[in-house]
Length: 83
Image 1 (tube, rainbow, N blue to C red):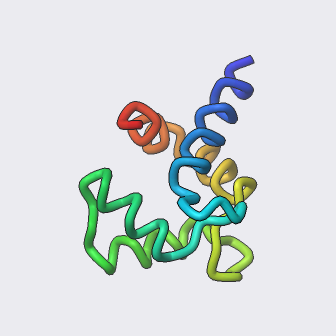
Image 2 (cartoon, rainbow, N blue to C red):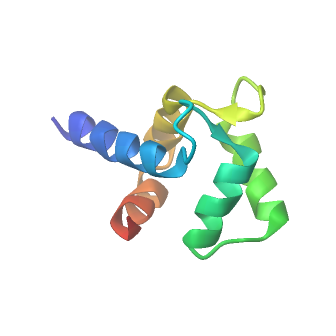
């Protein structure tokens, strides 16, 4: 049940950050999202992309974001609260 709640929050975050609705979050979309959350350093954006984009295709999929959420629940809770 808690996992379903976490996944629903992750899906909400993903949809909010996927500005163009193509089913993936680009580096630009991630930068815009982090800027809106108060973090806009280009280095921080690149670092987060490297952390989350496990297949290194240059995009964050919903599955990658969910895996990141699972590994970093406290961080993602703060993001979900801000939305």
